[in-house]
Each structure stands twice: as C-alpha cells, then as structure tokens.
Image (tube, rainbow, N blue to C red; front, side, top):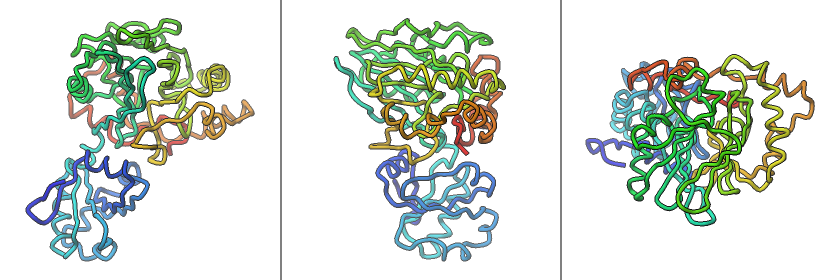
Length: 383
C-alpha cells in the first residue's frame, strides 16, 4: 500500500486479497450505482460496506462522514478508480484517517489472481490453487519435477506463465474440465503460448473451431518424470462433457459439478431438463463410488465463507456428503425442481462467453473484460 499525495493511500488488488485472507477488519464505501453494488461487491469475514453512489457525493461528503468508522481502514471503491480517488480525497479533507482507494477499481479486482499452495504430491511436487477472488473462479497448477499442468485457466494467462518461470517450470498441459460459460477460458491461449497440449472433453467440443486433445475417462495425463498422474472421470450434468480429475489419488478437481457449498447448475446451454438426470447420477452415484477422503477442489466458489486457511477453497468429499445441501436431496423430484426451477440469474453474457470459448467469437481485450463483469453464478444457490 502506498501514499497518494500524502492524503489518501492506494490499495492494490493484491493488498486487498492479503487483507481478506488474513481476515483483517475493513470498511468499504462503494460509490458505484446501487444496481451494480447489489449485483456484485467485495465481501469478507470482517468486512462491512455501504453503498453511496458517486453522484450523491460530488458536491461534498458531509452526509456520509458520520456513517464511516474513525478507527478502521476505509476503502473507497468504484468501477475503474477515478471516482474513488476523488471521494477518498474528500474524506481525507474532512478529517478521516487511514483512507484508501482501490487501485484499478472493480475492473482490476475482477482480474486479480492469487496463487495459494493446496498441498504436496506423494512423490514430490505440489498443487496450487489460483484464486480469482473478485469473481470466484478457481484454477490449478499441478507441478511434478520441472513440468506443470494448468487446469481451468482464466484468460489472464500471464500469471500462470510468470509463476512457472519463477520456479523453472515448463507448462506441458492445459486442461479445461468443461466448456465454460461464466468466464473466458485461457486454456487454449496458454497452450499456444507455451507449446503445451490443450485438453477438452469431446462432448463439449462439438461446436469448437480449433484443434484440441480429447479429455477422456480412463486415459491418464502424466506430469513430470515421477508417477504423478491426472485421471479423468466422466461426470456430466453441468455440461454434457464435464469431466472431473483425480490427481495423485488425493485431490479431486470437480470443475463446475460440485462446489464446497452447492452443486453445479445444468441450464447454461439451455438443456436443463435433458441434463438434470446426468447431474444427479454424477453426484449421487458416480461420485459416491469414490474415496470419501478425496480433497474436493472446485472450479468456483460462491461466497467468502468458503475461503479456508490461507484462502484455499477445499473440502473432503465425505464432509460434503454430510454438509452440502445439494448432496442431500433424497427425493429425485425435489432434486429436479431445485436444480431447474430454483436457480439464480444466469451469468452475464454467458452465451457470448460460450461462443468465445468455442473459438467462434474473437472479442478484443476490453470486450472480454466487459463480458466477464459480475459474479460467476455457476452454482444452484449463487443468488
């Protein structure tokens, strides 16, 4: 964190992520319009926030000063940064201390990736989770020897490349567990940049216009020179091709089929009635046959309460069968109604994002950013 003209300080997305992971206190004044605030905002274990639109503060901040704590960090947030700097300076002039603005605004917050170590592999190597905390996306890097595989990459692929370079790693595989609808995949882009093999389930690739290698159950992917393998498990329901990955017989990458607090939705390709049976079969039969000691690592999280130690989002499969509401709907009819009728709004621009991930749309960087604005909403209960 650094000073801004000696009055206010800027807080980077990295700084804010560290603060949230450490569960420190923070008070946020969000000056975006009310609709944007209600749809998507920064939350945390010890974070309080209020929304006062910028246009109400142009002529002065006197009306809001009394609503802000005098002994807490205050972070002013807007869409891109400019408005928050103006308001933060007004607050400092009004006598408030420890005032910050979010560098790059929600635009930058949406794109920040924080790598956190999940654990070690048995014969050497590690698995890392990349937390896109502003949007709830989770991607992974599996490391063995001097090689790495990246799973469910987001479009900010420079982060994975820099992480690998710092550790002397060569990215050999990029894998998408399914055709994503909530964010633009970086899997193919990363593969092209690094010379890696790009893997995608064939049943999700019927409309893609690029080359890929088929991600299939029973055909393991080797990483490094040790016995570390990535074992695909066909698990349809969120999409018809959704495929989970068991890594080193220990870690279970479930894509958008199973989350820590919910389950995947089957409707983002317009085929909820067709796929709901597949979803139930995957969750209530296929996954039931697996070891309950597997550590579930999903492709998304819906709320800050799912962030665990050091920001890792994970849970034992056995614990989820006890605690996850989506895994405890005994009646099949009730399950069908829950996952087809009681759904949150669909992700922003999800149809266009699917087209981008098929290679059929080629938006520029700013258009991609605009498509991804807002929460992911891939789970049944992500209201």
